[in-house]
Length: 293
Image (cartoon, rainbow, N blue to C red; front, side, top):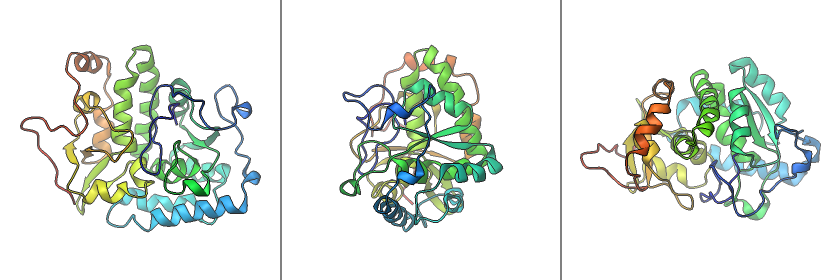
């Protein structure tokens, strides 16, 4: 949701940082000072609702054995797939569970605005939906990616708290010139995270769960490296923006993720800046890898 139109991933443009070379898609004349706007649900056409339904059904059919239980249990809260959800109705359900709400934005927004919304437990969702010709590939995150990929796990209390803490940490990172390091944490957890469960490896990242092909690739393929979660390792690791990921980081639980990211990051940023960056897909000497499920 943060402004950068360069991130693409075979079906979805996940959140990333910085400014792109062209203006982001969306009608920003409707935005308030915090970049939120009205959803204007009545403007969606029958064709757009049907497109949402087809996208939803394609992804829902892939979830069994690949998505984490927390996600598959919560995705039903989005409501019937036959129509794009009304954000106010969805927010009512979400607020009762975890005190979060969904707010509409015109499209990609600046990083500080994004952080500020998360810190207030308000998740920004793009109002527009991709065109039929973009069914398998869209350059920027649309309403389907944001709703289907991100919102279900906001019904999980621990993950919901992690997202708020991330927003608060982002506001601090912007003052410390550390947004790129924090971007890598978001990328490798919220967008492309994997979790080890008693049933095997599962996906919880929105960029994976809303992607036509990366869900199976991330969990089952023997190609990528899967590394146990390590905060400094993540912040040192570059990521791919134009293909499936070649490195995934695996957590043991959402509580592990929340606990690991709770301390003050200031000394961590200092330590990471003293170390060399790691290329995406690289395996460090002696590093333990996690096998495909």
